[in-house]
Length: 407
Image (tube, rainbow, N blue to C red; front, side):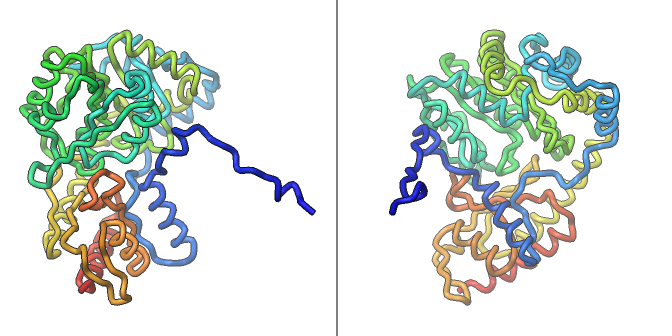
């Protein structure tokens, strides 16, 4: 006798959802958490999340907002007060000049990037994405109906896209360049001269827009930050994306924003009105406080990240076969590990890829990293050093032992 269970048929989903790959960073973080829950002493260096608490001025502003009853819907674009504070920040720190009406506050910079891609990218349009790239960019493009075009960068260039590479990748179908500086997953930044070189190419190709993901802007080590939208002739074709998660240790608050020319901002606002509406009213009050608080609170976190970066680079430099550029921003390292491909573990596991290497590290040494194929570079892996020095010291001991055990 057939039951209702026997008759159940798997539902069909939107083909773009079926084609979408799950986030590898979230998947590895989940695997590490599962192993930890089982009692294993796993060290996770896979998540891109600061290990600091949200600074006190931000927390206090959120508490006050709740006490004051600031708990209702806000303007779809965000509160006028927050957008005015963002307008001032962009003008003062970035040389990007927009009206508050052309700023859209969202549920994180991730949403801002996705909405910008969805608005700009038409069916069949090509979107240039320098690789290694953040795992979500290509999936966002595919979901919007576009075609991601990965352009591979090298260890020798510090994983930076060159003007020559950009020029060669642009076709009549190119619609968008997605740029991330400082970069996730490499930590690489563009100098003013390098950014101007890219802008010069884009000025010759006015049919190409640029989405500039600047979420790691404040996490830099002695180098300037350049917003491409501030450069000559780039304002109308640039979408500047930023947020509060990384520099302000506000990952769970889900607050980001974008700034763009009026037509683009209007289209993004329309899209947001049908998807999520404005972000949390409480988070927006916290965001105001974040932009108003002393920058010294951010500087303190950045100094800690720099100390960790220097420690990790020193330890990786002792490991045979690894090649890793010295990043000037974010809190990631992206070493090339292909020297270990073709080797075998003591348990007989053959390492043919960075994915094999990451599973070996997790299963045999309780260390969680993310393989490079997810970032468009199969020869590398991403290490997040947003962790305590004690955990980083233990992690590098495990990496050293794991690599030495391969034959």
